[in-house]
Amino acid sequence: MYRILERIPHDFPIVERPYDAMAKKIGISGKELIDILKRLKADGAVRRVASVLYYRRVSYTHNAMAVWRAADDGIERAGRIISSFPQVSHCYERDRGGYWGYNLFSMIHGKNLQDCMEVIGKISEKTGIKDFQVFFSKREFKKISFSIHHE
Image (tube, rainbow, N blue to C red; front, side, top):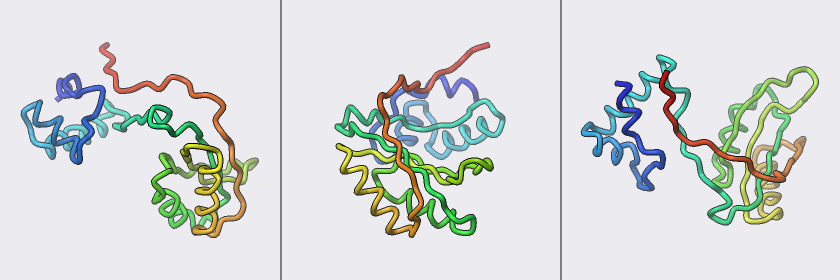
């Protein structure tokens, strides 16, 4: 089962069903590959499977982390709305921690600062959340893709 990890490519195929394409090369079905990855995750052997999009390579040069103060009873709804925007790559809930009132975080990508701010405005309008802060990336550090560590 662990040998499957060595056969998964570093770069996911850019196709409608990437797991099917990878599985075909391995000689199993897409469903089997997904089931194996789920088992490996449950066993703790795999932390997560995710694609890494290099936004700057596709002309998205501006990144904004928008943090939202969402009502506890409305966080699921707000998270679904925020996640529905194609410019949003990440959206997750965090504890307020007693010192920081923002509990919903989202990463928004745009071709310029105005693009990001327009999306944030639309999100605010659609969710009804008016209390938010925006932080823009200054520079991007190395992203690390899939790797296997043998012990």
